[in-house]
Amino acid sequence: MKKDLTPTGRRYDRVSISRIKKTMNDVSFLSDDLVFMPMSAHLNPTEKAPRSIDGFAALIMLSGEATVQINTKNYTIKPNTILFFSPDSVIRTERATSSAAGYFLAYSKSFINRVQVGLSTALPVFMHYRRSPMLKVNEEDVHEILGVFRLMKMLLQSDKTLYRNEIAESLFKTAFYIISEVSNREKEQLPKQGRCEVIFDEFMNLLEQHCRRERNVSFYAEQLNITPKYFSSAIKQVSGKTAARWIDDAVIMEAKTMLKFSEMSIQEIAYHLNFSTQSFFGKYFKQHTGVSPSRYKHK
Image (cartoon, rainbow, N blue to C red; front, side):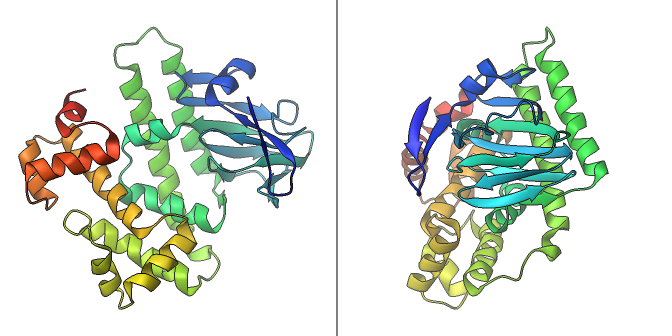
């Protein structure tokens, strides 16, 4: 367990998913990539000291109330609330009622890349989290999400191993789709956006439409009638990632999806993604993933 310092100089523990599955009770897990478990005020790993999880995480609050500090800012969570944590979040529970209970999920960066959640599905969740890590859901939403988790738990404890990873990944995508739809539903209730946030949202919409054909930052800036310099600055300010990185990530996501789930040849995929040659596509793909398109397709 690695020790780090918060911006205020306070020590915190960086906890791996592997450690969570070994030290917590009633944990269901898929290798070191995914863990989920019930949590209560009596079983809270962030109560005594700040911690950071080496992966993405979410807490679905079912009963009671708690105040959780994320990167020095406090959030009070009540039943039917989902609280999201990114890999760089430093988390501490400030207080919790005796009846506080929920369900905790954590997954690695490599897992979310492997699952291949589509851009249009992931964007509502990311954009909601960017404005607020809390998402209000209703009882039916919670019932559906927990139903998926219970099915996944039953699978992981069964003797069926041949397609265990594939089934678990599909069930995770199911829960993610539900959360994405809720994020879309709650979009109108979010605080009013500033200029840079509006630019980012419009960029995300353009990226979903054009990422298969356009990889140039200038193209997207032109569509928004702003200079590439201002465009790039706004995107970095809002998301912490450059516009070029967002474009590359979207292209790679599309490429991975087509390599795994379409009948297209690598040459056809290269053409579909507007690469001049299959060789250029291969170099681009390997540069961003570390493997060739053919190896990724057949692994």
